[in-house]
Length: 196
Ligand SMILES: [Ca+2]
Image 1 (cartoon, helix red, strand yellow):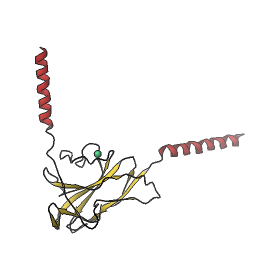
Image 2 (spheres, rainbow, N blue to C red):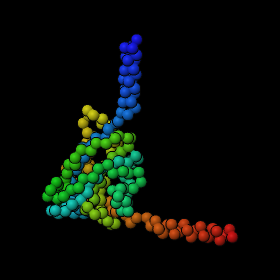
Image 3 (cartoon, rainbow, N blue to C red):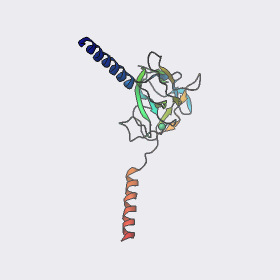
Image 4 (spheres, rainbow, N blue to C red):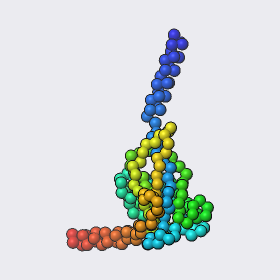
């Protein structure tokens, strides 16, 4: 009797264990990312974006929608993304160390939790992004659930075969938030005056 009771306790344990596993099974986003052709300066395909020793930032970004939202220069803590975009991984490139002047590179594979959405790459002109500087967004691709033992999803910043891309986006002047708040304050005062 006692043995049967132990058996049932053990069975309950196994059942609870498998239920726990089922409810916590993670789907994985695994990405091998890099640039197969590199990058050149806007209007000057004769040289790459870095001179020897210069450093810049490449990012792997997740977006729920299929839109690469513009760089927000005020969001340095979040990797300069805006809207629903989230930086998954950053890779610092230094010409002469882990890339050449064209910033042709292969970053370490990214592994994280999967959720439905898109991924894209971004590279900046240098490692201290500023208003008016340039950056490039790679192609937008659907994020894939690549739970092990599958191989990582492959992501290439360069979509055009046989040639690099130029940095075709300009970091915009941020929205004047303080001016907008000031304007809102003025409206409230006017409204109150009208009521009085
Ligand atoms: Ca987005």
